[in-house]
Length: 237
Image (cartoon, rainbow, N blue to C red; front, side, top):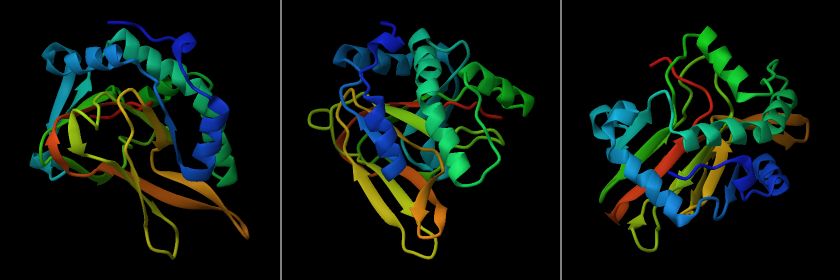
């Protein structure tokens, strides 16, 4: 499989930062070439690469399945994890400062994983998700333990115009003392979405306040939808 390094990232980081601050998410169009998307989809059936498979309906998480990669991660996925992370550190630390949370994230992904190990979070969290007709994912947050990074990524491996219909990426934003706001996105094959894991700061009249966010996937009308999730912290189980 082709490897991705920082030299290959098609990212305007100033725009990503602006959108994460103002919206809690940022879409990076055309991040992956179509052939790389196809290579990643082929990993789904390689059973030896995974530590855990979750059938969503068993746990009332939705309808579909996702698989967590085991260590050692495929080279490309390890690169994505370690080389995206430093670009997100300034944003994450600024969010902690704005919300007066006494937390500073380390400069390297390796150091974050070391913090996870101290809390017995030893299991890798990158995953591939597959949905068929009727598939969906309920609103949730990917935390996995005491140590968590506040931003994560999802890469879209299928074409919504050809491979499936429906299956929009959905987020909700819960502002204190207000109704929830729904955000519905339809990224294209090869796009990357960066978004908040659980909350973000929003500036009000008296300073910044915390806005909680969840994410999920709407029901597919037909076809198959694959995505690759990149979560930077590890899990207890």
